[in-house]
Amino acid sequence: MNHAPIVPVILPALVAALMLIDRRIGSQRALAWLSAVLLAGCSAWMLVLAADGWRSVYLVGNWAAPSGIVLVADRLSVLMVGLTSLLALITLASSVQSGWDSRGEHFHPLMQIQLMGLNGAFLTGDLFNLFVFFEALLIASYGLLVHGDGSARIRAGLTTVALNLVGSALFLIGASLLYGVTGTLNFADLALRVSQLDGAGVTLAHTGALLLLTVFCLKAAILPLGFWLPGTYGPAGPAVAALFAVMTKVGIYAVLRLFTLVFGNSAGALAEVAFPWIVLPAAAGYLLAMFCSLAGTDLRKLASMLVMASAAFLLIGIGRASEASIAAAVYYLPHTTLSAAALFLVAGLVTRSRGERAGDRLVAGPAPLSPALVGGLFFVSAVAVAGMPPLGGFIGKAMLLLSMLPDEGLPAAIGTIGWLWLIILAGSLFGLIALARAGSTLFWKSDGPTAPDATTVGWREALPAAIALAAVAGIAIGSAPLQRYAQATAQDLLQTDALIDEVLTTRPRPGPHQPSPQTFR
Image (cartoon, rainbow, N blue to C red; front, side):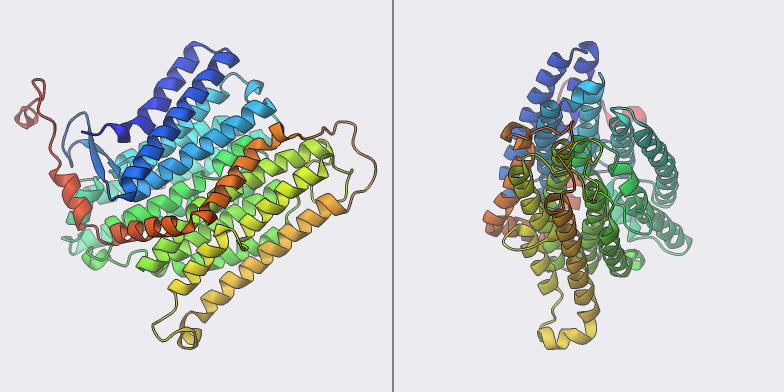
């Protein structure tokens, strides 16, 4: 059995435990780098295998599904683990370079637990352990959010805790309803049993599915459930906010996984529990978030609004539920995550170059130091976040728009999906205007001398943001293979029989200590 799927979960957990034993910052940094490099290597290897169609069902404890815990590594989950590993390297470099990690002794252990929760959520094959990993990453995120102290961070942490406690309660209720009518929480087994429900069972399962959809939209910050995000990501440290850029994608991933596998086309009466009606609120949320970005008061809150808009954009593609639209969402997902992370890191550089008093507020202030370097990074990140050519965001948006065209072409589409095209294009225009306004205010409208606490930003400080933007450029350069990967991923998500069969037929490895199932009957 290939043990690669368990590595992204168990490695950060073990490293976090070691960090709690040796709390010296030097030792923690060394362990963090070791963990990040090993995670990146493991995820890169799995990505290479997944590109050729590899799929692995890992039986934790060597117990078969649906009774045992399973991890499933396929194209989608491996892509998300690889994206998380790359983001971990970038944010680790930023936190070490800026010294943000030294403001408290628990930063690195919390970051490892966060990575464990993220990777576990992407790899788990059952609903209960999705809840467990959700809670692990959320608990770690609370600690990372308040790291560095400050009243704004404390308030943001309390708000996040309160909202996610509500979300966790709804998650448990929804999962309990599904378990009550099906007797299982394994995704593959649920997919088989949901299709056999009738009568009151359908009603209860439908209620459970809608509760879970609400929770996932809350995690993904889909409006009107996403007003918490700007006030949470804004006060966070730049490196922490950059890592949080992938957290909203956990909710998007959960929608994509659960509502294609369990409530997909073969789910009988529950086949359309989420798709395609979710497109309308997602489109409204995208337009509203982009419009609200015009009123951004600082660069971090502007970036937060754009993160909300990107999650809604992804949900539009997923909600359309066609192979082409899902492929467009899968292609766009790594681009938007990395570009948002880069913008958060650039916001930190802007604060350093203008001084703490002016920070990244979008008002005329002291002239920034290193305007060419910081301004250049801002320009590239703004182009990436806005989805402008020649970067991959433009390709992803074009893929989604083209996926909506009927066979008759654009003239026939005007009466059916013209409103959706209009929303996407108008939202993109709003985002572009907001970013252009931010750039002109920060770099062209200097008012007064340089602040005394402003520092010159060199390439060493700018390297993490530059790496994130280089990865964004790499997505555009490698667009063709990534599009093929996204297309194959969409096919896997819509053709679930092979995955269900593999999960339920994978047998435990023989061994002298393997107990008999009869023991527990």
